[in-house]
Image (tube, rainbow, N blue to C red; front, side):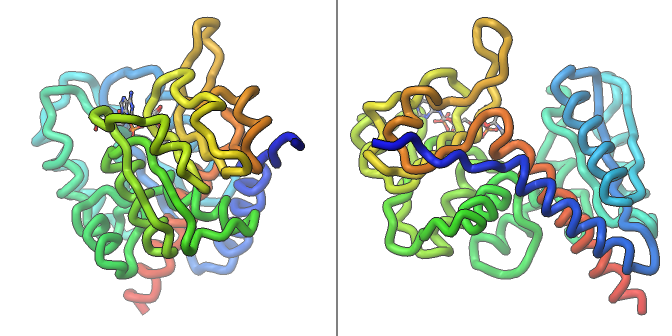
Length: 284
Ligand code: NAP
């Protein structure tokens, strides 16, 4: 059997960002993204820096609010309320995780849904559930764009999503369902993960455990999407999927890095320009 097609999220993300940039140039002002980071989580710092870089590439205004670890929930909410009213800011992103003393949900609820470019506000989540327009969470939306780009059919396919978090697994399952997939969601209590995964025509792994998905869990010719960003023993970035062995079984696979990650970032830019267009339209 031939080795799988590599689903090149990096190249697609580059294309998406160029489109966003071209569109941004036609607007009467730059789209604006505010990114709030609390504390000094190293991974969060890397993510925030790359979002800043993406904004530059797309010709957006970007503002960073770096707050100390001991920031209170009230201080954070006050900042968000101010940004909700700031005209040049179209999107507000609170980098997660927040320090444990802060109630994440209460904070996310404060973001004006018209600026919720991460798609984590319950209003955005509810819109997704009922199939109404709203901001889609960046990671699952990026995966849908990868599937579309490579003309991978979803209707009627067995789709298995491993992981049920609010930011990846659940919205991923809903988006696949919207496109008429037959969707199964697995999690830590799933009894026979291997058997369930083996049914999948499209398998999405979003757990965060190195080596969880092995070749014997993958149906020949399945499409395999690896969301995870783990570090292996050598400190190298890797996913949940045993890439080298699974690519010999699958028909298509996303690499880590270079698959889902870059598309997640591209969708944030798409969501921000969408927010800017909405705000400009409301103003005129
Ligand atoms: P999370 O909140 O920790 O959720 C992990 C999910 O995996 C949970 O639903 C958990 O089940 C399930 N799980 C844990 N062990 C399992 C097992 N042995 N078998 C089956 N399911 C198991 O993680 P997340 O935020 O969704 O992120 C998942 C991964 O994606 C992480 O590696 C993260 O770094 C990565 N990620 C990547 C991007 C990107 O841009 N590429 C974006 C976001 C996240 P329970 O619910 O039962 O606990």
